[in-house]
Image: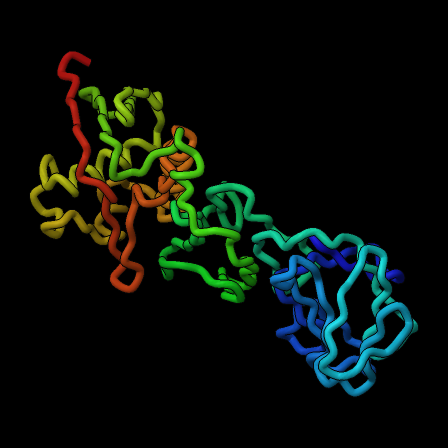
Amino acid sequence: MARLKQQSALSSHELSAETIVGRAPSAMIRVQQSYVSSHHASLRWTERKCWEVKDLQSKNGTYVNRERIAAGEKVKLELGDELGFGSLAEPFIVEDVSPPRAMLLPVEGEQPPIFLDQTLIALPSHDQPDVTVFQSPSGQWQVDSRDLAGPLHDGDLIRLGQLAWRCCLPTPTDDTDVIDRFPSLFALADVNLLLNVPRDEEQIELSIHASGRPMSLGIKACYYLLLMLGRCRLRRDLPPTTEVSEDGWISVSSLLDLLRVSEQRLNVDIFRIRQELRAAGVVDAAAIVERQPPRRLLRLGTDRLEIRNLENS
């Protein structure tokens, strides 16, 4: 994807579909020198499939190849162009002019961007998936966490404690569903799930049936969560004191009591279940667990589930 590199620095700056350069905290490329305006210039990927730079009425001007451009003027950028913001002393070089990519850009620090090349992204890490970012079959990026669930848009902020990422989401080139582009994928609504549960409930096997074929996803510890959510959705085989709504919603606190695990372990298991289903070809695997963050509720995202108790195990 497109990058700028300051000649006096070792690091490069990846460009989102529209990148603001300036001293303001909201600028995506922050240049702290006094000769740079708060919102000095913008770099934008255009409908003509090229990059342009525009001066935003800056005090000291924007330079392309050492020539000052007029305020408000748009100039097409080419590979190797030299840009100056308020001065020619510390120029930036255009290192790449390829189209923008979907990414999460850390707001603070020098951490590299997180490119959204995978279907499921865990923040801050796979070992601590407090936030999951995923792509729906329509191509819309979504977020799922204890505090927030729903679609993401270009420029949105994802906050997690002291960490924050800005969403850089270029407009898709077309509206074709992922399922249409990749016929080997299928939607959760077209999948039947089968849990084979031994008497001790320790070695639980998950199988799915989709597109007329069965597929075993093996035995995983995280499938115990799937079992409990399935029992809530089907409203059976639960302790009599468990409070579950008619459509299978259960509070996070009640679920943690059932599972006897921490909330961090719960988040890890949710992420692993989603990973297993996505690897099997379920394009909207993240929908297997649904949330209502304001009410702190969870439920299984499908009722096409069979729980088979293996009495002789």
